[in-house]
Image (cartoon, rainbow, N blue to C red; front, side, top):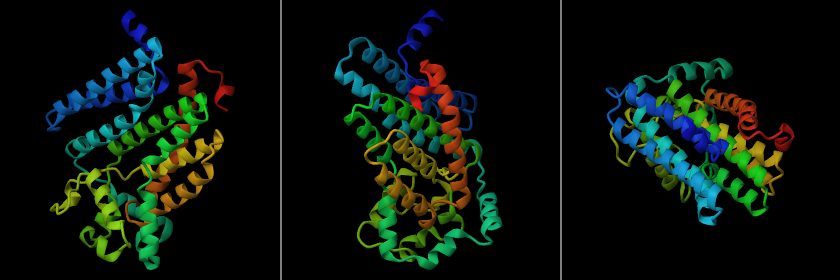
Length: 311
């Protein structure tokens, strides 16, 4: 116990979120190992990330050497990617169900129709190309925000934003476990016809293949709906983009106008490009507000910072 208390003093709030989340999904892998074929791989990766997180935190605190500081700051990026991939290996075998029918019902209750089908009426290659490029900027937005804060020596803004972004991702991951769904490109549209029905100009097809690969769909995959990541609800793209927009305004990022414009187009693109139902976007907004509300108190409690320091 004393050893754990000793380690705890070196961890920042983002480290703590990483470790708690990985312990949670490690427990799920252990408890449901008979349902999860790659449970041993999942647990091994989780232990490795936790080990690196603790090592980087201790070495950063004790030595102050730049390389350890940078590793401590930026290991969060591969953590998000690796956790997303682990969920891909977990959710299908563990849950064995999707809630797309319920999400479609919500959309039809609100709009009286399917939003992706309505937006198809305004589809054209120029708009599709633009929105597919904007959609592809998603994972770069938190990194750009972090670089901006580091360049202009906003340490408090960086630390709080890093925590909120990582915390937001983990909440969205929990949402995927609770409400697995595959999205309208599989349920309301013919996935195989997507490139033909909504062509772009130059890079749309290439960018779509990158998205597909990240979600487990290699080119030419038979029955892609059976293996694609169940990551529609909440819309992580909406939740995390709103968080970046919020943080950029809150801490007066020099890139805030870019985040607002790009973010607005990106959220629209999630439905236009058939990745999400509007119900997912509503879920993303709710999860964003939950992240901000609960994250503030968690950060203050852990760090001991007065509330004014992050207002």
